[in-house]
Image (tube, rainbow, N blue to C red; front, side, top):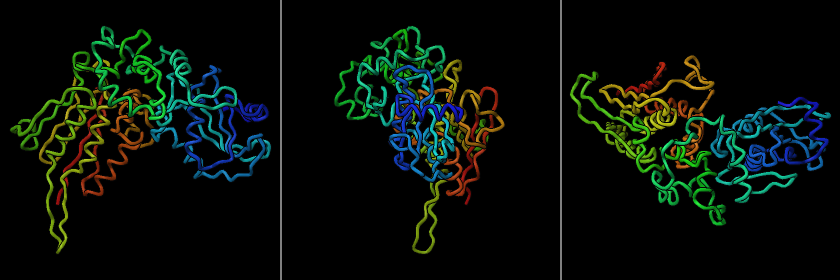
Length: 397
């Protein structure tokens, strides 16, 4: 966070492409748009932008009450899935010039353009507006390519023409990733659209995410990018196999097919209580689905040819994801805190856009809640050097 002296200097300078004042405390969309514009940093200041909540348009104190509830609400904006890719931001309460204000400080993104609900916002001076096609192209050119994660790297040898399903991009991916208003006024060609959505690398090749989400043959480039399912008639892998499958295709196709597999293998007991009939599934479908989606999002695509594995035994299901913890997540804090780091942020963004997740950082708490409500034991997680294992135990009557 900037020092108090630096913040006061920004207030004295008035609203600009790095500063915005507001007296609202509940207009979350307004806050998101401001954060998006600061993260895009169209003028290329390479300095953080600041939203001051509690100051009027002239920088005068509005005498608002800044409480912990508001600060928690502001802090949650980063991970609610409406701003993509995730902004780097900090939230704090300050007393500046005898005025209580909430501060949202947003760092310039290394991976623009940043969007709110599919719209790209920029600031130029005090003006805030949706980016034009030319402004979006300028933002793409600002990317700091050397710092980008693996899922944004180009796939050497792949081409947009031969290796991407452009019909799938236009009919399925694009309408979910970009707002209808922007598409209605769209003057961008397909390559510009792909670039703006972080699906084309600097050398013009499709990215890892593009191949995995839109590729005509993803497994050609990533031999381990599939889901393996095996169900055994017992509690040991030496017992007879009663169901097995391998799920291939794009990540979207895999998850849709895997949903069918999960539903097909869940059994439901009927309990009669007087005139009431209560259905008790041995596993809550949505809990298994959430863990599987996390396994696919967070897995290592860079140097592992091993698939995500679902092993279904008589009294538990095990889901194994290739790769270990990443970033701020450690073996010690895994599944025990709110710390979240994404090995594949662009894949996570694509999954959010395509409706496979609602918001970020809530997967494991939701799974715990659903299992408890269904009467299942708590999930177990085992983090090893090359795998993360999740074990979900069967509901017992």
